[in-house]
Length: 293
Length: 163
Image (cartoon, rainbow over all chains, first blue to last red; front, side):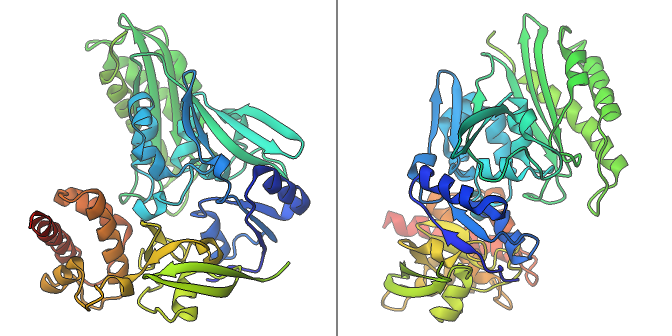
């Protein structure tokens, strides 16, 4: 349980880090919080020959809101998210999901961008970013590019990042005023990876659902965007008498559309069942939180 | 490139300058290089919490932190909890008085975690204590006595603050 040998560099600027990453090519890995990469090194699941430690690059440690977009630099930790009043008030789903990530000591080190780059299908952040229609900012010595959260994910623990590239920032547009946001998940124990989880954002005006965003995590292939269920919800009247039936239809659609993986934690059928139950729960909670429109 | 780098860090108030292999974990550095064997290694992949130490005032898994990353940092381990006169930290007294340990293997991690909790939240509910400690595994105690010990420490530390 000791890490294999690697070359280690801890540059102070992004330019230096990108230069080092380019030179390392396919054998280079970015080390940020290390809460996924270090266990993989210790267990020898990963053995990159070059580690580029970005923890000393102060320019990546920004948590700001500019023109209704939340911007999290690559060094923003889960604990920083939980301490941010801006996030609690404007991006409550992100805060709610982050409370369910691992434990304090892990949250003190692990980063949001690291989780998104790792793209574990059971992790919260990739699904949350997709629910907000968020953007991933990618840099290399060639320049920067921005892709949507959905484009960024390329299946289980896989992304479109090319050798020499790294995620420098993620961006979350602010939901419409009064939108209801909710994140619910089921895990065997507090802080464990979710067996299934659902992020929901509902924009309701005068009782009508104008926009719905629904992503499911834990299904095995990166975050699942439940587009079919979103279509069912959009345009419907959501009130005390109608919402239960509409949410049941959306939940059935989710269960129909997901294709959950099976592993030692849960069967495929159990995951599908949970996706349905948690969809109803997330939608009901999000609806109860709408208001002010 | 060199397989060793020199780091300078403060551990329990004392400054060390040491050459470390870049792949060495902070836990192994503390235990093998500084002979501070109070920090225990359980799983070595971040799950059990036994190796938790305080780094710049925040609890971290020392098995998931590299020793080179501790350059220019301030670390506190179980050995640093006693006062200079040798008196136990309130949390240590409370674990002692409330039977908060049996074999003691997990205890250093629990103490560091509990201290961070009580600094941020001096008057936690029992649920908050359980949640804060949920990343630390104990195979002996069944946790009840540990939760009681942390609640008692919180009470005692609040009383001391008033004086």
